Length: 299
Image (cartoon, rainbow, N blue to C red; front, side, top):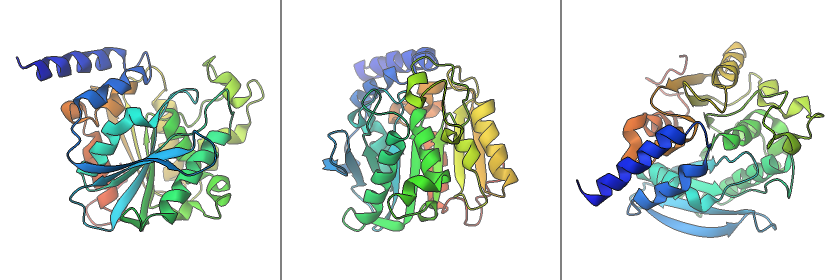
């Protein structure tokens, strides 16, 4: 067996076993088995004054401008994470003709809620403002996140306060994508997360599920069916139900062969057989958030 294949199998086995137990810890190993010939990269772009307010841009080498823009926000319980560990996400999106913008954001204990949401909104505003300079379409902007990053994405898409601070509104988004996101998690049980949201005085309006209105952009929500870290029924299922009740298009999918972390790992090209995560993202974006024919989101 070739050495690369052996390495890939070892990594994928670790991700499957550990995915629901160690959250995003195994993610950083994926860049070692990810190709870099599908994109050009612009690194360390400041979108704010803080050292954590920087982003990387992954542009398809064979893009047909203007291309859709996807701002990806990683997870890590709001206390850990580095955008450079998610080059495999940038490669995945660029390989399907999308421009990926991957920002860092301020973390606990430097900040608490809602500063990290504000940083995500600032990154979205940067992407819209700089869209032409990066070859993107300002009318085809999506925000996407995994785990805690999916929470940030949901708040940006559903709660008008955050883009409002950027003199924008959620209507600038053609849709949003949540992977294994916590959208309804009060009272907080995770001891690492409690201080992030001022437990026991966590503000009720910190929950994405409380901000659903009929004006929300369409959503693609995906989760591991047996996620042991973020309850998929309460969070993904509950939010999808609330959005449908408000008349918002939503596509809700659960995958059996992944865990919490290996759901995002399935975007890395050696591991895409685990779940059709990338195919679903591509379908959602390239059908304008499911608005175009043949892409009904009512599932």
